[in-house]
Amino acid sequence: MDVKKKEGISVLGSTGSIGINTLEILKRLKQRYTVVGLAAGRNVELLLDQILQTKPKIVSVESEKDAEWLKSKCGKGAPEILFGSGGAEKVASANDADVVVSAITGIAGLGPTLAAVKKGKRVALANKESMVSAGPLIREMAEKNGAKIIPVDSEHSGVFQCLSGINKEDIEKVILTASGGPFFRSSKEELAEKTLEEALNHPRWKMGEKVTVDSATMMNKGLELIEAHWLFDVKPDKLDVLIHPQSIVHALVILKDGSILAQLSATDMKIPIQYALTYPARISPAVSHLNLSEVGKLEFYPVDQKKFPLVDVARRVMEEGGSAPIALNAANEVANNAFRSRKIVFTDISAVVIKALEKHVQRPIKSLEDIYFVDRETRRQTRNILLKKELL
Ligand code: MG
Image 1 (cartoon, rainbow, N blue to C red):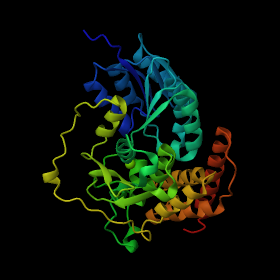
Image 2 (cartoon, rainbow, N blue to C red):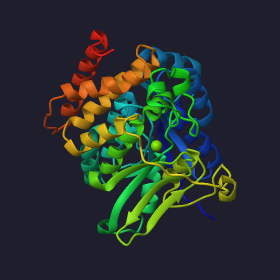
Image 3 (cartoon, rainbow, N blue to C red):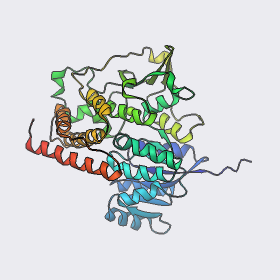
């Protein structure tokens, strides 16, 4: 009989889109995995359901008040319930967690991601903002502590799979595909009129609101270029983007001899999430296999930089390096949030980000404190731009 010990999993961002998908996958894979920890923000009702269903040992939530509420609801047999970023870091570094799913959105996910990396965990990374802002630090820490980072982002999961067994010097180009978002076929003039509801109506992927708006501006692809640069140690001039409206091919790798490797799968985040959990094993997914004869055609187009300037902005930021990616991410988080709070119109997002980057002064980044400093400063400057309505 196989008495192999179950692997323990902590899920950071358990009430978000990736977190919910992860827990659904884990329900199917009860024989292999056990949930050790859950960390969430403010959706305590859902978190309570998740606690009762998965019976984790340790839980964290954003505020102390919510932590007290959870304790009162769980009663006897309650898990250890913590709060704040320190709490999420404890969930990330829990001794029994072999795998940590890092799916807190934004720079808020950086501390917990690093906590998992420092403990040498296997990290299923969905939090692209932490890789964009702190790529070199995360890589250095992962190497030092023997942590393995497996990407969850569908494009990066695709690249990761294509690169298996490939010599680095044989890589000519790594291409991330983009659906083009809901406004791929809109004219530049039409973009200014787009509402939040339209931006949130993604044609292919069902995701959280922040990334869905990033997808509409194509900032998402810009952030993913930088994420790929750090994850795979590929130089900026070897990274590219292609619009692929069907979202069936997630990534392509062009090799020296002209061969192109591609990763294709159904457009469902459960596939890359599950692979990050079971890697290197492959097991049957909860979603049906892709039927290519039903898909029919696969189209590819270049990005229209006039309509979606943030892809090029991200490329320049990636080439500049240093503190620039931190500033790009921070300015975008503020602008994205302002659009979702209906304070600015759709095309202001890119205008605000570009303005904030013009004001950014390059700084050497040597520590986590340096990263947080640039992040804070850029947020303050970006909020000032919004307040003064310098360009709005
Ligand atoms: Mg993606």
